[in-house]
Image (cartoon, rainbow, N blue to C red):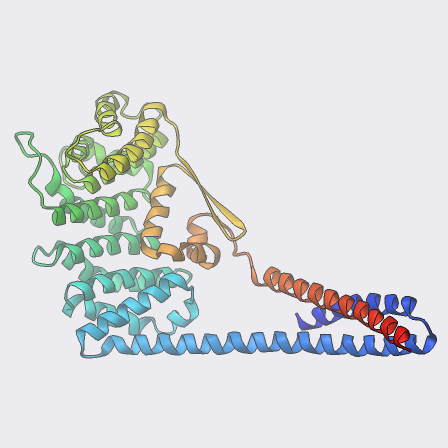
Length: 439
């Protein structure tokens, strides 16, 4: 704060003033030095106050400019041009990912929600994709408010329709699968909604199961990407379910379609598409983690057959696969194999600012990766400031970073001022000696 900065500046300058009195040759010069020192103190204090005021004014003006641009982008969501609407969706999406502005969004939630729903219903491929992502970013921003659940429910029917619509583009369907799962994960844990979403998503990726004769399903790369997205979104929902519920659903899967059996999921490991194989491996790891929480000897007999499949994928050297794909697959399945075979729990450390997030187990890892997919480089900002994400990952209350940054900047300013004054005093002494010699 300016008052503290001024006080510290005065104390520092007083020490230098006393030093000037000691080295001076006569009393008159001492008085002059003392007066000059006092003036310098006042100037430095005023300069610091003015600089701090200027910084605050600059921050306020930047905030006003930012809010004005965001308002313009929100207004642009209702324009007639599809290209213009899509550009506005993309712009708002980037801002929501990189900045946490819940109060601003809360005041405009209905306008944004209506625009998102309109973009999903009437937009084309790219507009639908950005609208689906923006629906989730809206939930991220509103996580501290009850309105997040209302927004989620308002958009659920539209997102569900597109996810099931075979005539829609596979990219838009994949984004809607993710939006359904993420919105539910962020805004509420209603058991009935969880089951309906799990059922919907499992029906979508069922197209990658093996055929009746054991042959791999003929799936295009685009459909494979859709199945992988649905499977990953399905796995995210498993992380918020109770272990006992997972166990019961798997046990009842022999007679209903609420959840695929473990044998069905194992078949997905034989998919020709890397994304499907890796998503299936992560899904099995989560199921085993939750199953072991429910029972220590969970599916031990069945795991023996699965381990053989995992070993093949963890050491895959087939030349018909791309080198990059083989490397990525081996790295992923080594961790999965180590967990299922040896019960070695994966651990991750993520540093952001002065804090560290520790992730232990597959469930928090899946949740963090889903948030990274949505927020990209903005994940660190939201981990530091976003109330909802800090609650999800048990980070506690946000730590204010502005105070330490301002203090550090002030200390640097004071050190530079002190060094400048010391140099000035030394130069003045030298000039005095030169003037004496000249006489």
